[in-house]
Amino acid sequence: MTRQMAADYAKENIRFNALCPGFIDTPFNRGFEVQMGGREKLEEHIAGAIPMGRFGTAEEIADGIVFLASDRGGQRAAGYLQPRSAQHPHI
Image 1 (cartoon, rainbow, N blue to C red):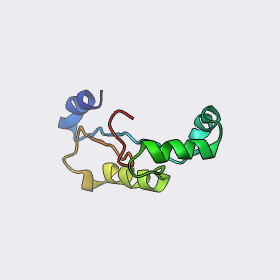
Image 2 (cartoon, one colour; image 1 turned 120 degrees about the vertical axis):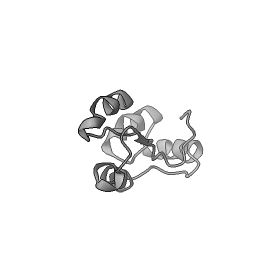
Image 3 (spheres, rainbow, N blue to C red; image 1 turned 45 degrees about the vertical axis):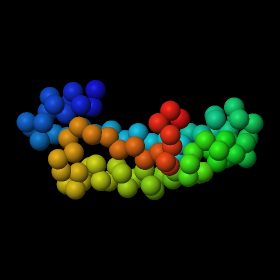
Image 4 (cartoon, rainbow, N blue to C red; image 1 turned 180 degrees about the horizontal axis):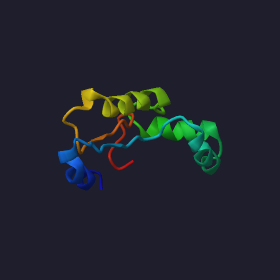
């Protein structure tokens, strides 16, 4: 959808990009914490499932959003950033 929208509006200099984060340390994870049996169990899972062994942070994601929204994003009219703590694509 991002690519199609970018193609539709490129002549009007409107860019469409997507941000695809992995596990980010936010309140959104509370449901996962319950499923996994608590924060400690979830952190153990993250440590084993993600090569960097940790959650990403909201600040790290914000940097990507600022880049995409800024003029530095320039020609990036139909792309995506995938800040995923070095996660494997299947996670």
